[in-house]
Image 1: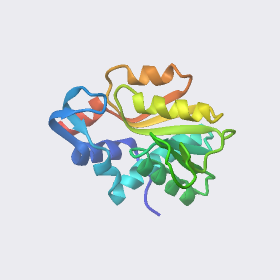
Image 2: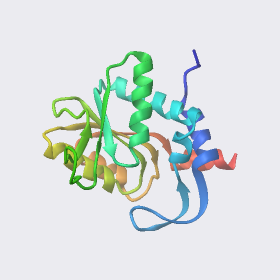
Image 3: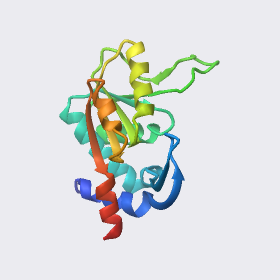
Image 4: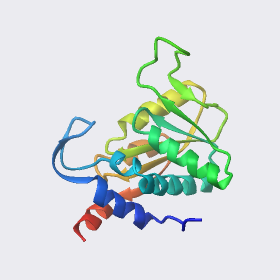
Length: 187
């Protein structure tokens, strides 16, 4: 069995694989002099394992039974968490929230194994303003659920995104922060 993954391993992977300097337009519409593309880490086997294990640790510590988030960013995170949970024998289901309802198939806003009575967590790759996660919280509430926990892979430590999420009543935790990633990238 592979050794346990710690936060430092994830921070180092994010610094090496996901952190970029330059001028980037963020989903919030503002420009930034750096970008953290978590997909570059989570779409590698070692990155998916690190993210999945650390997410699963947090989910288990809060007795979460259902994890989800906004499509498309949260889908690989949910998948990584489900894989880690399966390896541990931890009962966990997943779902994702669509920005728009499909006009075919089941025509659901929330897709997957959603149950409003579950202990629910949302995951997000990067939090700046928290806007996309706030949309997911609204969708979960509209479906009768309550979000107990939000886990972001990276907290950009700006624009009060974490504070906006905490204002919903959810506990907010981060696997890595902007300052940790920048320090690791400069080491």
